Length: 108
Image 1 (cartoon, rainbow, N blue to C red):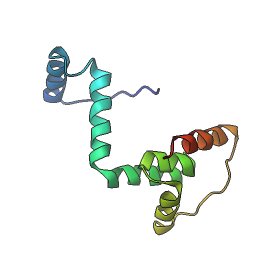
Image 2: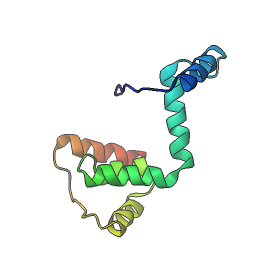
Image 3: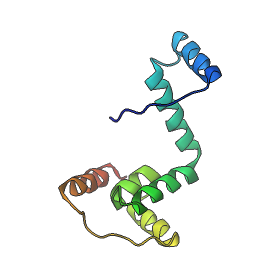
């Protein structure tokens, strides 16, 4: 799991602290994870846009992009084509190959 630092306005920090004390969240990390998951579940277009951007920048494979976007590999491929993004075929290295295998296992 990666670590990220964020600057959060005082009122949101206060609410987060109150929610932790009230038992709504275990800690700050849990609160932030929950809010991000909920945002991307409610905003499918943002989820797809993020996955498309990461794929276009060469940071993730097609399988990982599909998993992040919540789409099948075929739907992701079509989405990338619609966006005018050239598809890359085959993993670039062993880490990418492992990512593809893991993403394929997680697809429904």
